[in-house]
Image (cartoon, rainbow, N blue to C red):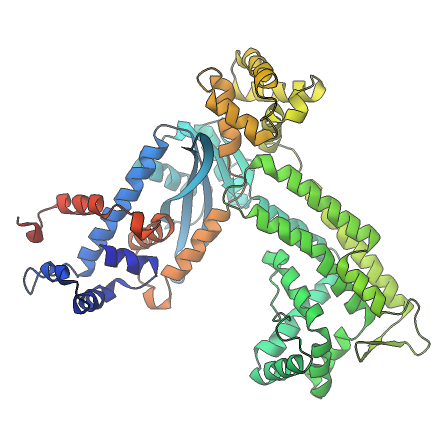
Length: 550
């Protein structure tokens, strides 16, 4: 079983088990010889391997059911197409696990489901409910769901969320914050014609080097001469659906700009000369250095939003900080890269229409400078506007914002309209008459006895959960606030594992085999701590085994 676990963790095919066992025997592990009861029974057939994988997955699922018990939980759902053009839906479960007196978020892969009849909202709902039945989960315990925001997921009339809410009206739904952030930035760029052209130029640069080892070798050679090879980044492709990855592409252009111009200048081909004309002007240079500054805080925010443990309590503060920084960089143009740019560029346009930039002549004009400043300003303002629109407190986000207000020390220490509004919204959501009185007792308890430790929303939620026997309704609200996912990033990571497991060479894996391999890979944990003895007992008791003497 340990060998099978090792192969699964390293995405090796099951057919290698006999070779791995033989290698271990050659290294002195004689106990594996007992697997070969006779020449027909070796327990190395694909069916035997899958039975052992199933036993190990059963051990993981038993622990999950024991940890979850009858607690509330949330789900993260997304669908994708694999290498065999099969449409699969991944379902992750998120719940709170108590560890050392604190409640921490934990996410596990629940199921991998093949969508045989298309990804309609009704099909998605039936698939989820069927998976709940298999894993003994109750729809009434579902408190939240996070999706990518596609119409089939969040449609107001007949989307998946609405269909699940018809089964349990108290479910809180969120649109993945990472998707919203990418859409806010991408749509801001789409609204500015030059930014669309800029993206085309970046991709043209990438293809110029990626498709030609000769061009790449010339670039490396020039970087080596300039002693910048160790610091420069490789040119990267830009994808519209992953617009925030643009930061790495822009940074690579800025780092390699001088070398880029040298390579293009040496190449007299029409393609190279066309690229040279597009990049050797002040407009392209200005936009590149501006984006290198502005995209940096957005990229950092994006990485923060992809954390497995992020919850609604930490979204607002991070978003506000980033929005302020983007606005500051847009208005002041005083970011690190822009400062370097301004020190290398003359304040006024030269009479000949060119200036020297690190040994290369750059075309310059008042019109280009004005257009560059204008489109950069429009982009920054549009990003801020889109972020405010996409992260507005509407629908279930308004309820979650009210949840935050109840446990925010800055709000509940002073009675006022903000606190009263939060209490009203939460009261309507929980439908409990005793909530107002219970919350008031909890609030006064925290202010009187926990003033030194109640520093933020999360710490106050931990107090509520720790005193759940006294403040049951308040604790339930705190549990929801920490449990409801704000991102479906776990599903994206799951699809990455899916693509590592199901490859061109393993394209015939069925859905159950794919699930077993992904489950062990994602939730199997460390091999040293896995309970193989329990897995063996499960495997042994499934049916009669000749190796066990019956």
